[in-house]
Image (cartoon, rainbow, N blue to C red; front, top):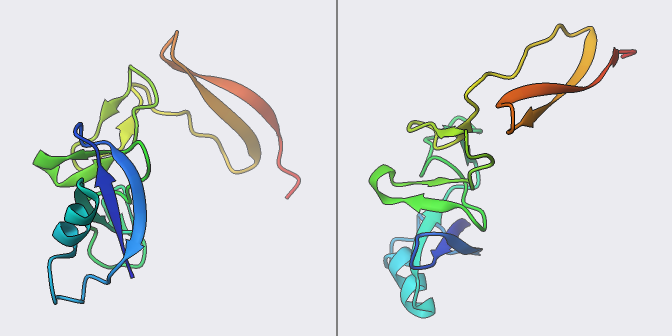
Length: 132
């Protein structure tokens, strides 16, 4: 089974459906579904995230499309909505990256971090010793 994303006129994903498997080559399924709906349709890979196929296969269109994602034609891939104005799009993975990397901690410490857009930095929101 393959998944297909429908795009509006701004290339924003409005819906994702399960459809004919890409191994069924009896016709171009993107064109078929697109004509059926009167929208542009692009196949998307459920197993692709950040341009990596989680089962070791070949990544397809950078990311599995979700509602609100944008299809970037020049990259032939889907990018999620931008989480913050200061974050920049990684051209290889089509994922958003903060201008400052999230702090790393040792495994013994349970810390959570939240992005603070007003200071463009990470704020610690919880700290404790991992009882695990």
